[in-house]
Image (cartoon, rainbow, N blue to C red):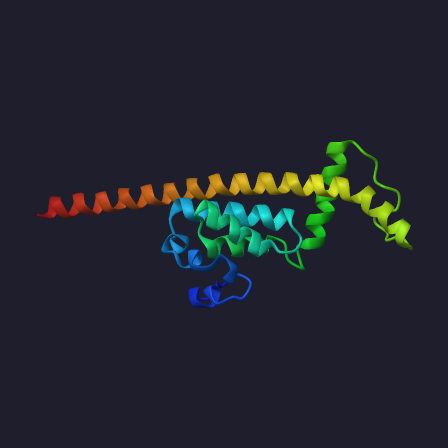
Length: 173
């Protein structure tokens, strides 16, 4: 299971110091339904859309939207060295399908020379970017509503169980 670093270690991170005192505000560390759902959505969005610098962007947007910052940072790890190749391949396939384009010639092979690289990147980049945008928007939207729904359902079940216990205790007396 993924374990988040302690709050103090995150606050002392040199890449997050630019946010300054805002990072110390308690609302960014609260485990509420809204904060966590927003954090997951932001992390997944930037995890899919941005190949580098995902965490600082997710945290910066988390500050603006008052999300749970550790969850925002951790959710960006949806893309990691193990998931990166299949996600980008799937994004290319989805983008190609949506654009109704044929696979770029030699799309799976790297070209030689600077001109070849540029032509290859332009041919593969457009469908890949579109596929990643689709993944980012879909994953962040679904995760937001899924976290809110599951959390709310769990909370309602806890209330029902507490009510049943109180009723059973009252009947005994």
